[in-house]
Image (cartoon, rainbow, N blue to C red; front, side, top):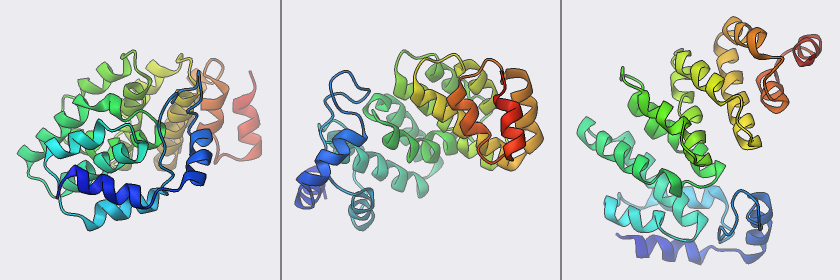
Length: 233
């Protein structure tokens, strides 16, 4: 099994009409955040199915997928990493973690980041004391590395570890891009699902200055009265 076979599988289910829609949906036009990305027009479920039914690939073959111009090929490569990480030894997990970081900029759209980073970066760091790599990613000049930093903490939140999420959210509140506002608000909302008071305490400090999009995402499950209170300048 190799990357060439996986690419053949992907090309066999490509849909040109769906590709047109996905190019608009994922903002691939000139000046947009995914300018120039090439879509084959494959539903995420089909890409997942191809990865699921094929055996593990060596990292050098996954690298070929990650280097592809096709969005869905990069998704397949990242999903292979997630699949292999789940069954890997600690030594193998470290290798996959480092490989993912080396290729972080290949995860160059929000879907590529969101369905993979938490199951590799987040899960690898879950029992680690040193999580400084997340703060280095947050300080990157690359939007996708910054999004990886905050979305990876989803795994911490699920395990009731909120400190890094809150610290990174605070660091990224001044970010200029709407995609980061959404990611920060989403992670804050996840914190609130586990511990409402922790979220409320954070919002009481930051609500007047944080981006409105981030705030709306964070308070999505609040009552209308509570939402009105927090949205008030």
